[in-house]
Image 1 (cartoon, helix red, strand yellow):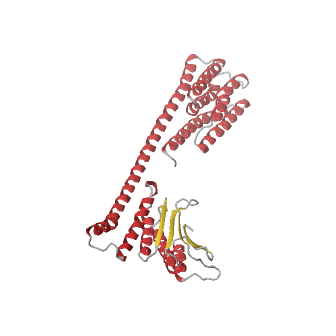
Image 2 (cartoon, one colour; image 1 turned 30 degrees about the horizontal axis):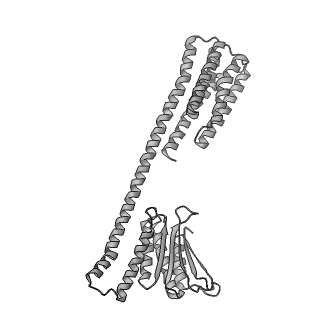
Image 3 (cartoon, one colour; image 1 turned 180 degrees about the vertical axis):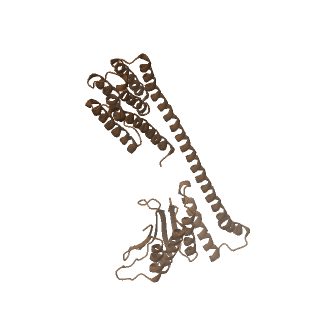
Length: 374
């Protein structure tokens, strides 16, 4: 549907289209009774063609093209009434009234499509042309004044109508923007609160214990815990306010990283602009990453792995996660993937509509890429 401003603009175009349609309907009824005056058929066909061009393009683009408006004003609003008076055999006010009506819808479209001075010039041009046309058919002053009032009123009321709708559209867009900003702030606050609680239960608890002297700071298990929590803290610091990961997918990946860090594998993880994915997809990504990291720990001969997770630039809403190690790698043509790689990585991704690929060569390490959707 677009923004509120776009919907307001589209509604104004439709409203002026209906206004022009009512005038064309009057023209069809009027010309149908004048079979002996072919120029009136030609004039009506020209007005119909310009209307299709002007309003059809406006509906497609969401705005009027000023060139189409000027063509409509000059041909439908100015040339057509004078041509009917000079060459069309029109001699009485009722026989030219349908053509004069089209000037009202032309002035309405000009009032909302052109700059203010140009719109005023169009209305003035239509007034002069239509006054001359009515004088040529001998219309009395009341008819002329009433028509001039209709031309000016159509332009003024349409302009006011458009101004009001666009104003309401902007107010609606502003309200939506504030609501989205409030939701984003609320989500960031909730994420920050969750991190505060996690820090309280991990890093702060460890530091408090060390400060009290209750444990030996050089004990292997204490050093291992400090290493894990330092890595977790480092990942929190690397995230900017705009890069806070979505809770489901971020939590799943973080749990996978923590589980292997406790088994003496150091993991450097970076997350950026993670999308919101279904819970089952987040779980599959987390489980697949855990197994890929387990493979690094068991087979790579290195104590360090790298995890990168981001949104898929080619598919809005998609996710790409990579697990990389700098171990010796292997020859994919000579080594069959083990059960863990087939079932826990490829299998899990396939079950949720994703895919996993392994890129490796002897001496080049291993790169496992998880992509959803596949």
